[in-house]
Image (cartoon, rainbow, N blue to C red; front, side, top):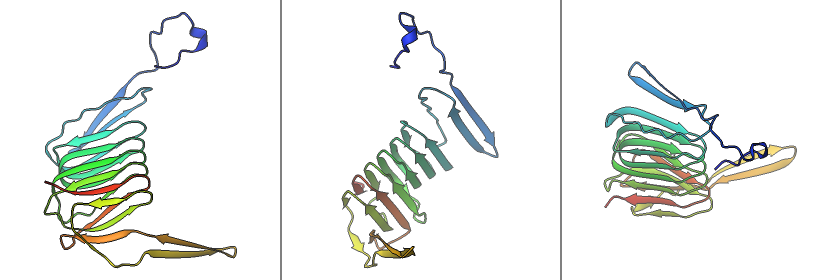
Length: 202
């Protein structure tokens, strides 16, 4: 509940400042749905054809994104909230700042590169048992777990050296590289605080 201002003592709040503005535009078979200007959270439930060429979703501040049972290329962005994608066919690029990233694939596009990242939260992705990919994985303060047999890539960590005002700065990007199923398109998985799970569908 919102805290009532002191000068409203004894009065009943009737409302105000909570208008909801939702717009939808279609042009050339592309639909844009937006919600803005509301002082409170707004839940949008959007039904799309099960087979879609491209779906882009984004939200900011304390909102989660949930997608299920669709096929196509998904691009999902969040700022403070989770991303849950279930029974997906196609490819996914999913990024949030504070929240978990949970994805379950029914099937994947064997030619598409994908990426899954968050700053604070677990990255948990379930791939089909037939999955093939070149993995690039990094968790700064967590662990990486996998059901798949991963062949490590002996690549050395990338080192960058810069010099400024007589000071040397050395940056080492320590990623885990490996191949699953003999390799395929690049799959990037990254977080700072949390674990990374690469699961095989049962």
